[in-house]
Amino acid sequence: MRIGVLLLAFSLFLIDGSAQGYKRKKQDAFPQTPRFEKTGWYFGLGANYSLNVLHVKEAEGTVVGDSSFITNSNPIGQVGAFAEFGRYHLIENLYFFRYWNYGINYRWVRGKEGFENQLKTPLAEIPLGSGENTFSDHFLNAHVEISGVNRLSDKTFLQHTIGGQVGYGLISNRSYSTNLPGLEEKTQNRLNSNLYYRFGWGVRASKKLIIVPSIEVPILNINSFNSGRFDMPYFNSHYWPITFSVRFFLCRPYRMKSCPPVDAIGLPEGFDTEEPNK
Image (tube, rainbow, N blue to C red; front, side, top):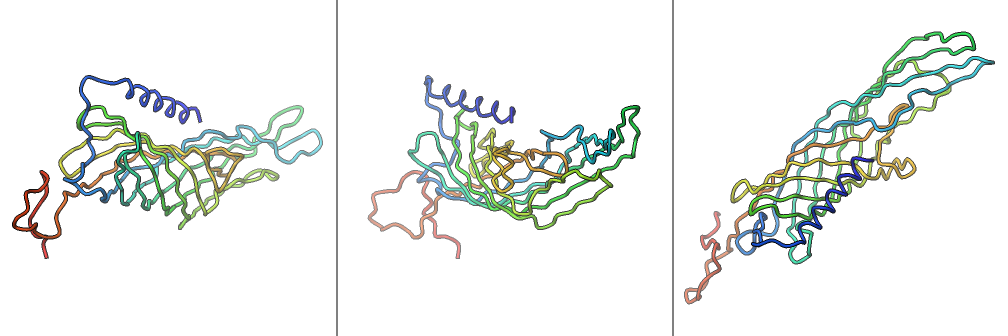
């Protein structure tokens, strides 16, 4: 949660700084009309990591007289794959916002939770063995986002994105070791929906390509609401899936559908007057 707050605060600082003015107005790294189309395709590749943010280090199970069963958990995140594909639409004359987009993505969320059991009596603590639970969920999601940018130079910028997604766990695997009786297991639903914030640094790599490495953090788990928290519950722990990815925007030069009239005065610079390939 603290990481998300710090990222949002940093973003607001950058937005405020960009409004202070500068000697020369920086050019926009995004494709300009009418030289380029306002829409195009994008794809991205990356990885997820299930960061542990809240877990029950010591939980009490069944109590018998003066004795009780105790478990100490040790949740550990693991790396999973991420991929996305979609379409973007440029926004003009809407202050900070530069484009919105929609698409689908695949997320592999995985991790494990080690634990040690013991019997606690007034005289001693008796070990009862240890074990490990693991989870592995493969989600297919549909997402929609809107993004604003802070220009750093003619070809670089900072990107701030608010997005939402809804998806379903196509494959869900669990492995269990014997746990304490009486402890309530938490688990993420197959149906998953959340809001998230994405922060990235973008560069216009070429005339037809923009590259944006970014980090994405959930800010609200809608389906498994968790009292308004952002995390995903698994076993006796809670995990915060963070996504590191690189997104590639494909920019399309504008191409006229047919040749202009012979007596036309002229065309804006950058228009391609060649007949499209048939």
